[in-house]
Amino acid sequence: MVSFEDCHDLIEQIHDSLMEIRKLECEMAELDRMLDNVGNKLNSVDRFTIPEILS
Image (cartoon, rainbow, N blue to C red; front, side, top):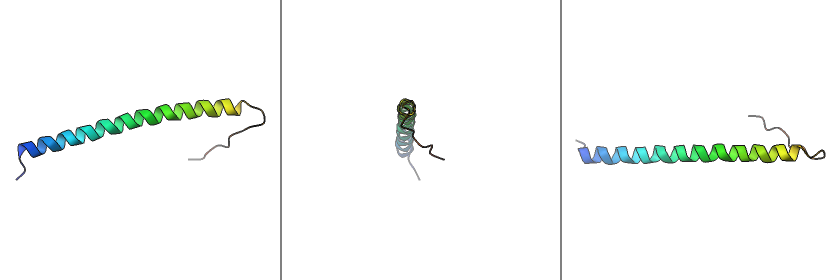
């Protein structure tokens, strides 16, 4: 049988992991915006074009 303390500890670990994932998702979104900004600036230079990356 699983004790209440074990369940509580597991719930805390899951919560911490989900919070870390959310933090990483936000950081990735910020990096995507930064890369888009850099790409747009580079594309504005006539002789330099970044090829599209197909998903």
